[in-house]
Image (cartoon, rainbow over all chains, first blue to last red; front, side):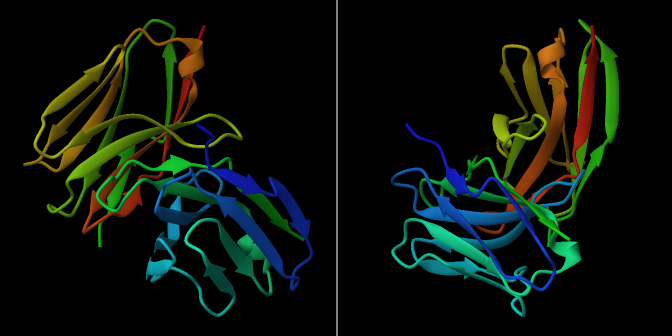
Length: 114
Length: 111
């Protein structure tokens, strides 16, 4: 079984530029999460999807962050414009269904904003 | 919301010794407690978990204990090996899949 796939793995951009991250969850997993992980910290939830519906986006900074999961499979997280403080690892995770708490993480995208 | 505290932030042990990492949580409604291992530059991977109706769970050299009354749970690694070196995160799942992670413990096993 293929794991959660994320791309790109690394991204370096200048501040004020836009950036997008892509995630493909494990096949059949309906629940998808985007996390932000700062160095030396645990993952912090940005948004959670059940199929194509964003059921928890309370921690997503909506002034500059947006996400979509149009067909309920892969998802895109966007930052526009990026700020220096956005430098972090962006992790995607998925789980089979809402009542299954175990999450499977992707390798993450390491973002550096200069 | 839930608040999860994790201690210690760093831990060094000699190979073969035991390592214990402790987490406390604030929301008594939390009912699922996974532990993740994250090696440098890699994804977090689930190593063990425990539900609120269980007090202890063991998987080979790894065990987790849960004290619901005190709202704390611990990860125990026995007979540590160099490949156990990583950052370990605890987490608490509450209120329908809302999850809060601890701040992580960097474990170093010295050969």
